[in-house]
Length: 170
Image (cartoon, rainbow, N blue to C red):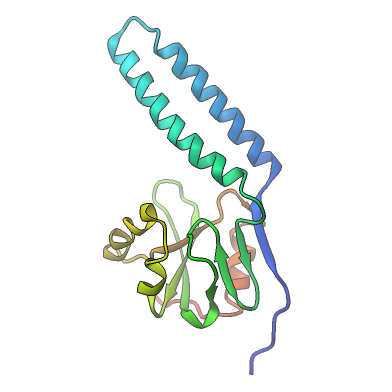
């Protein structure tokens, strides 16, 4: 029988990251506003596209930043990543875990490999559910945890998860 780990790991964005997000969005919008008054039509079109993309990104970012409570909770029962939208995934449903680095950002991500993925994929929000088949086709799990803006960071979270589930062999 494995020992019971009574430690609960809660991960959320730091205050510095929240401040940097708002500062970056402010600079983005100021640049786009100046761009829409430029005499070149190409610059105006790009500025309007930037405003549309910036508003949608800001909306998603604000939802993440103002979420009440931790974004990721890991305890002896399982993992609950609010961004995945599936509620808690018990350890018994997770067959293994792996880590990989993205090509663009070179940031490590945690992949959860579930024994019955269809049960949990059906609970995901539509925007994530639509990407799941693409991830599967490229050899990745649809249950990906990014620690990019969360504290304590990738290494302690990954090591804590390995206490409960084995690492996936490549």
